Image (cartoon, rainbow, N blue to C red; front, side, top):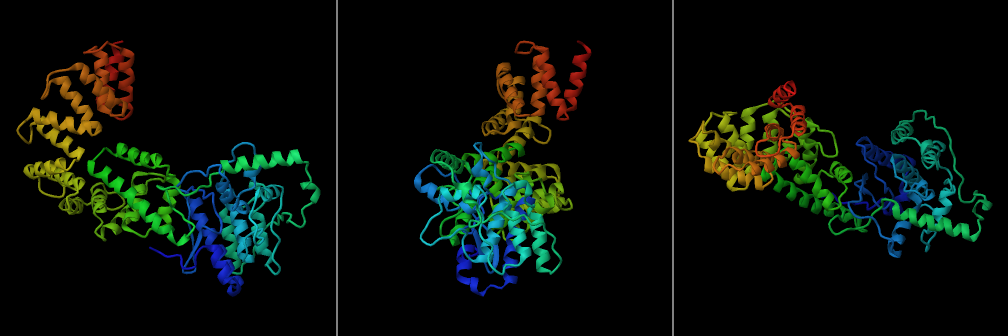
Length: 534
């Protein structure tokens, strides 16, 4: 893991400020702005930028503390922690009685304060021995800003004062800030409108001279609004930050490994893609982990094979980002070179479908085989399918059955289903209805949607069991509700014919249409015939 050798930004400035030139300060400000621009480019809002969670590693700025935790409660100790961040928080959140949603412009406000801090070497509104309180929040909401440090270049002042403008619409985008700072570093002309805010000394005292009842009302509202702001504390499951900032990445590793273990279990049971994706997302929801924030952590912390895999997995499944197959393949391939077992299976998938790389069935088989030989059930199911269809290897049904059985014994639902299809069809192997029924039953019980549908088919037709139209209906209904297009067609047919259930043409049309919209040609034809006869 990387170690924050310079500590956080606050400790770094305290220790090194006297040695920093303006070029050094410009570079720090530029790096910080670039880091935030990467978030905004991914559609992510940090919401909690302050000098305590910006790390300095080998003179490079890194962002931390993406809040994979619960909201701070209303205890006095929690409010004390919260008020420690007052100077960095968008003042708009103090002013509204309604919940104010922190936005990209809120991050820009925080950047303005941080740029001032880089110029001064001091925390904003710092008075030794005193803590920030709600009174300061009130003053900031009314326009107070820090005093410009003498000898600060004018263009730099213009940048941070424009960033901390009280009106979000008047603030620049982070991309403009990056451009302006880059121009300063490269000595190009910088043209920035000057929107100065009044500082503490210049603030008109009469603007703060409210009567006690009004002030108490304002303070009460500020406290309520602070509790609404999505700034978070430590949670046992979701520790991504501690007061000791150098521990942050170690904690992140723990969380990454726990999430990887869950995804690993999802992959080896062989669910359909959408079911797998929804269960993965459900894990984050169940553990109060913000997916968007975790995704950025992955972007910013590619330090282990598991974190590389998870970033690839998010891109492959389109979780919190658009699917990016080329990026996915490169991530999976890099991790597989480090003998990361699950990525070897996914490299095989990429070669199999031509995702992010040229389709290559022989290489697909090779990577499936690597995973299979390490007893990974998804790899075993993969090479079984290749042997069954002659993909990347000569067709060999005996080997296909061997690997399907091996994968099924390791709990792979897809292998159970595919093996059941072989025994039910009786084309490549001797038909065995009892085996087929049991395999479909096992995959159904594991939540494999196609297995649910085929178990219904067995009950409907008496394959390996007695005919039970009611049971078939229930299973078709279950799979149809999970968007299985063939189950939707079969359910529609039962409604159309009144076979085992009450005839209902409207419901028949409904389910035919649902199936047809998913491209099921049989359902399209059945729907046409039904409507023609009405």
